[in-house]
Image 1: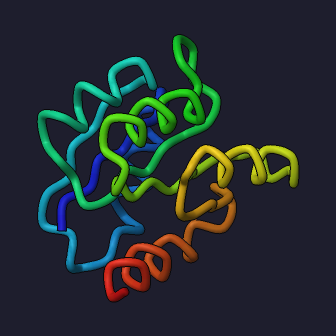
Image 2 (image 1 turned 180 degrees about the vertical axis):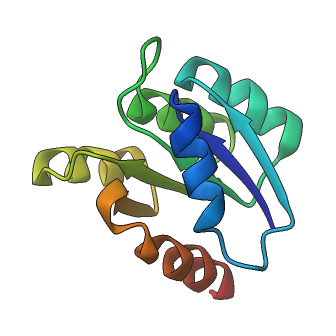
Length: 117
């Protein structure tokens, strides 16, 4: 499985790597939503783990760009903000998962369960 991690914080990207299931054999990274579509096109990952709040382009805008170009893209928002409004906005944009950074143990279950369907 290939995963693209999009987060402006290098330490968070490193932390996310630790929570990936063993089935992940390739991990790619970029540091902002404005680079997410280009990185997606280059690597064609099975999953994108997308932060919400980034300096140039937020994760929801980046997710919309990716999904517009690649409708079957699997995107999971991984954010520090867990408001119902943000969650609804993310799912309305087409993401398949939503994980709070304080609860990263949920990440493995989402990645594995969605690929089994």
